[in-house]
Amino acid sequence: MRPLTYWYDIIIVEKDTMSNLNRYQPNADTSQQLLADITSTSKVARWRLWVWCVAACAMAFDVILDLFKIELAAIAQNSRYGSLPWYVVIAKEYQEGYNLVWQNNQYEYITTDVASQIISLAASDETTTHVILKVAQLVSGVATPLSVIQTAAFEAYITKKKPAGINVHIISDLPDELRLYVTVNYNPLMLTSTGESLLTPGTFPVEDAIESYNQNLPFNGTLELMSVVDKIQLASGVDTAYVTNAEARYGSNPFVSFPEQYTANAGHLIIDSLNPLNTTITYVANV
Image (cartoon, rainbow, N blue to C red):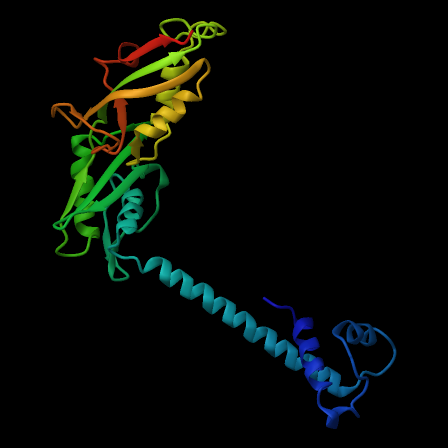
């Protein structure tokens, strides 16, 4: 919002371009001068007061326009009904145990209970036939699938919230499992042949680097093998590294190799517990 003094000065500048108004002195008046004159014992020209009143009206109209812009922005923000980002928003708004009511031309909750909003992670995608909605909750900071009962309730919620005629496939499952076979050329002055740090025994910088990369992937983010290698090569004691093979699987499906990148079907990944990193990383001393 532009202040009243701004509009007063704008009007005065325009007035000074009109020679027929020169008799209305002083010329080159300013809002600051008017404010000073009002507090003095001198009389203030009526035309200056009228300009001040008009400037106040201009400022009020300016405020109305600003409020109108804010209202339009809010309408635009809420007009994404049925879009992929919209599905993510409504997934996180789900309140376990609460009923939906029809009001304001949509199904919504009467009250908001943040404690019952159990879905912290959500991602949406689409195929030619349906929308895919992946969700998970956080338990002690760890992405965790909904239970069978929770999933059924959430599906009922989505059925009411989604646009009619749209098929939504909801995925809330255990994380995909990942196997990474990596060869690391290491500095024997800093690491042992098993990758343990000589400076801080009990620490395995390469394993920590891989776990850190995986844990910091956004929900439904894509694992990039080149990025994994970059992360490993920043680890203490590592000279070079490369991935010789990478495999992943969803649920009980067989492991499948992937050449460059992988997006988890469940939205999140863990290292295969039967093939932990200490068994899939080969260390070669660089001497």
